[in-house]
Image (cartoon, rainbow, N blue to C red; front, top):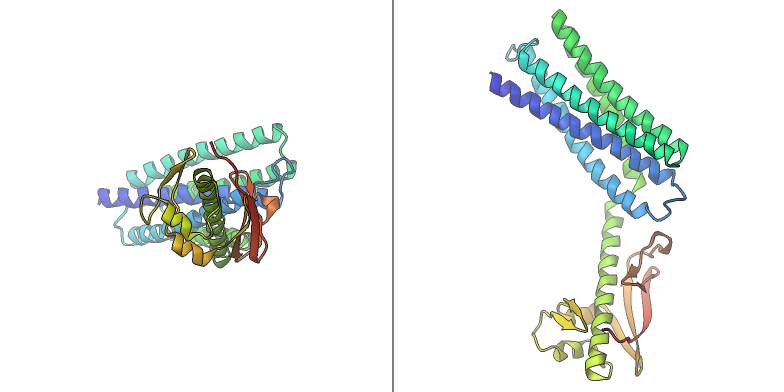
Length: 307
């Protein structure tokens, strides 16, 4: 069964490499998130996104790795795969070589960051994370090769269970830390809805500028923009150097409130699910400040000429 064995080991070490590398990256992101460096004050949103991404990869990849490790152990017990087979040895040493070069690259990058002035505590924790992951992998798989040569199949099974239990504990602990660090899925969905509202308001304000430049007056309501455009319901406004899609202005009129203040000034209002965090750079779109509180927020805007 050389083809099946090759597939199993290839899948095993692919999932292992993915889980191990992203586990290190997840740890790095958590360290930077909780021990923020004053040199990088506005990186929390990017770090939250990185934590969510690496957390997803680690969970899926580790479960796949554990599943395939169990299948291989069952194959060894049933003698479908020889414990000293060339396929097992070649794939194991090749995976360890790739892992070793990857971990060496991580350490080189961390030393460079330290020499470049990054916080010593952050670098130390990151180095420790790389050492723990690399040490665990090399200890287990080099031990597996030694047990194979000595024909200790029973000890190999118990070693695998200990390895998966310890690795599972580490993944579980880092996963809990990641889940507690970032906003919940419901909060993140509310953030995305608020970002969509801000984008809608910015688009409306741009079209207002174009409308005023074309008509020398503000519309009395949002639906006037719909009638002004010559191209139908789904608009592509190519005016004043902008290409904007403001879809279904009748629907937008139901979601946002518009009021003319004077000849060149108007007010747009919307209901937001959360308050924006100005310190994290939220609410800024195209240079205009859309920072808002929880609930109904209004913005007084003066039309400007857009070239």
